[in-house]
Length: 123
Image (tube, rainbow, N blue to C red; front, side, top):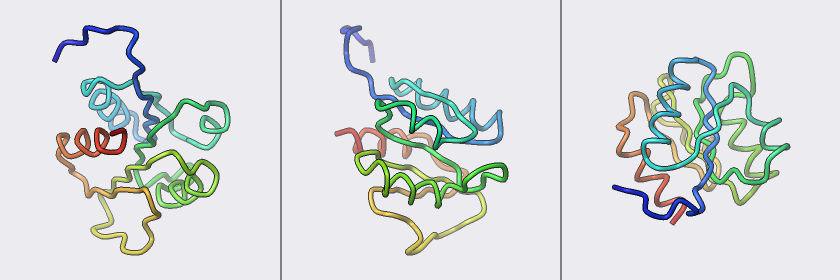
């Protein structure tokens, strides 16, 4: 798909992953789908600094920071318009721990599922 209008308002997606290789892969996925990605190992400070983040794409397991479920809850509380995608290689079903406006995927996820979810969230 060719982008003909370079002035198009591209959605910015914050990718939160503490593993550098997984973070890079997730950024590549987001950018290949035509969106701008901001990569981070910790999200709250970036969300406090920026007002252009539309979606946060985060892993649950964040040993050096706020875990993905807690992050989703913080975003619901402080930045309600922001949508959240949470992924985990360790949790099969988060049940009622998943906040509103949040979608959960088990790793390994299919990239098409993530891209389709982003499109629906921005739709």
